[in-house]
Image 1 (cartoon, rainbow, N blue to C red):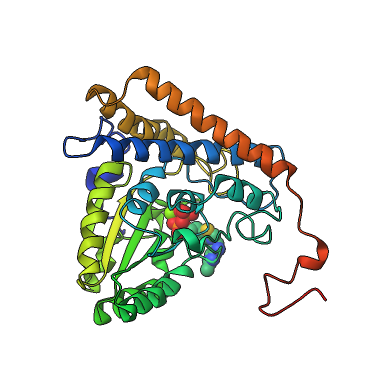
Image 2: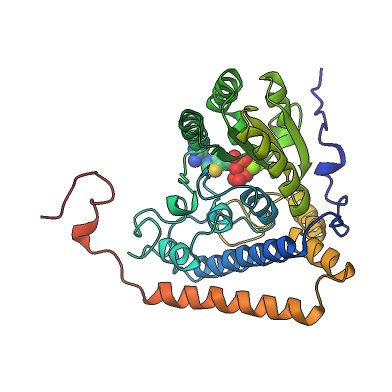
Length: 351
Ligand SMILES: Cc1ncc(C[n+]2csc(CCOP(=O)(O)OP(=O)(O)O)c2C)c(N)n1
Ligand SMILES: [Mg+2]
């Protein structure tokens, strides 16, 4: 008997689908402008970090989210800094989307004292509670139970805050994620599960790991309401996340958003061609047509909401912001040796 894979995602996993301009009819121009700018900011930051990796100036492992920008941006636009967001090993996107400082991100990636984690964590340990980003870690799946705790605290606080846990399709293969779904369902905790299904865990395609390519079936199993959508459509991501968050703030309990996407670079590092197989290379070419940034810009242009010259001005302004931040981070000091343990152990002092 041979096992066959259920293509529950249907055309959502097909790179040739969903390539046209987004449906922006019900959106506000101001929101779309800010989302477009944020996606560009993330894209250019990721490209700059890729260059720092290539130049061997950034020495920590860097997992880039180029191609996945719309999920972080659409979800973050539904949240506030009073909410509690938790990331993954691939979290530059979410850190920036929640309002994190570009300079602090670049400094962290370069191990500098001015980084968001004082240069002690690098790319995979980002932290910015002032903007609602409560941390990312390299251990796959490990932030999901932390988000459950934050959701429980939010429920007890009764101030209408909620939590959000970003995680990948690979993380969903870990038992802890299922325990989290169950606990949230039973206690009606205000946790938005955001599964960035980019079809890969490291180098392994989901069809080689699972009997079905959709992760939301796990939410069904735990009685958590869910939606499975194109993760490269920032408008729809934002619409679904906003509705879910509004309901959660009223006590509706958890929601599971499966956003289907694709990363353009290899699992880790700057290269596009390090994941195994010609197949991914062919897919990548097609997925670039499903570009979350290009599709929003195209829709805004054809709707008369974005003039060509304004888009060029936006792009060059973002490029300048990113290159200034890289320059700043390059000049910033490394932490002094005697500061190394301070951020690691509470109450520790250099004296
Ligand atoms: C507990 C644990 N197991 C394995 C790893 C090695 N690892 C790092 S990233 C990764 C793939 C995770 O895939 P996914 O959750 O889909 O996220 P993506 O990289 O696609 O964004 C693996 C297996 C790890 N860091 N932690
Ligand atoms: Mg994945």
